[in-house]
Amino acid sequence: MTKTQSRIQAIDPIQETPDQSIDVKAVFNIDCDWMVQGFKNRHDLVPEVDETYVFQEDVTKSILAGFLHNRRVLIQGLHGTGKSTHIEQVAARLNYPCVRINLDSHISRVDLIGRDVITLEEGQQVTRFQEGILPWAMQNPCILVFDEYDAGRPDVMFVIQRILESDGKLTLLDSNTVIHPHKDFRLFATSNTVGLGDASGLYHGTQALNQGQIDRWHIVTTLNHLEEEAEIGIVLKKQPSLDTKEGKALVQQMVRLAQMTRTGFRAGDISTLMSPRTVLTWAENYLIFDDVAKSFHLSFLNRCDEVERAIIAEYYQRCFDDHIELSVAVAE
Image 1 (cartoon, rainbow, N blue to C red):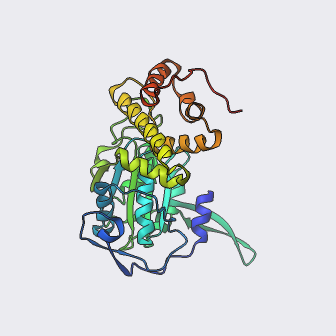
Image 2: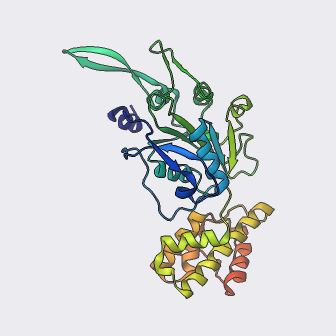
Image 3: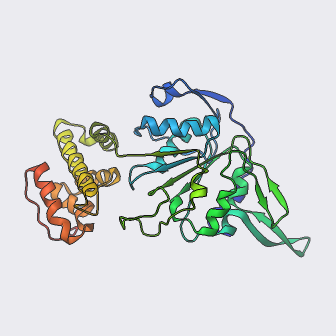
């Protein structure tokens, strides 16, 4: 049994059902008059609220539509844009229990469906079928998020295909049972590609997906990088010591450099971009080393292709009006 299975199996079924109407406009600060059902009480599986998180309206509405209308929602986007975090932060504000599964190559069919296990009952060894993560989640008022959806193994993907319909039932041949989904069960997924494979070479391990399966996702939305002001605001909230006149100017330069790498990436000039996560890391390292150039080396430049570092150094010079050495920096 995997650690994830052990944790899920140790949790009792969720007895509560959504019992509170939540005003979307008031809670998420978006132009929407929906009322979505959430929970009054907080369960152990509810993610922690990040007060600094900034919601992108279109993506937030897509996720909330998944909750409100039982839509299967797939969020696609480049790494570091916060796809999974976006779902978690919506769930956190609805007090909705959330289970995340990373579909790496180690997740197998039996991890999802379950397996026969040998237990001792009255001194005798007895073989029992132990349900996996998928049947458990389907029978509870919670959301199940498949991360790295485009990296799943084919046998795993066909298991998932069974439940992609709104009322999709799951037949467990191993135990001769049919799982009917709980009326408040919701399903989401995130991916770096849209199931057509990866031509850029950035996302090794991803693959082209069965288009019959992609067609079963009711809503497919894209999460892009934030606007400059919003990204600056997040960094300053995460690192309040930089919320000064000089600090804001520095963070603005960091974000503008990050945006230049994204533009260069889209144009094919460089193969590595700075995600918002990298900008946050750069700000954190700057506070540790008190050196903008060194912290930039340690946070980003050292992991870039040596052939492309001259281009990135040019971006740095444009933003900071300063020359940066291209040699690999090592923390002292």
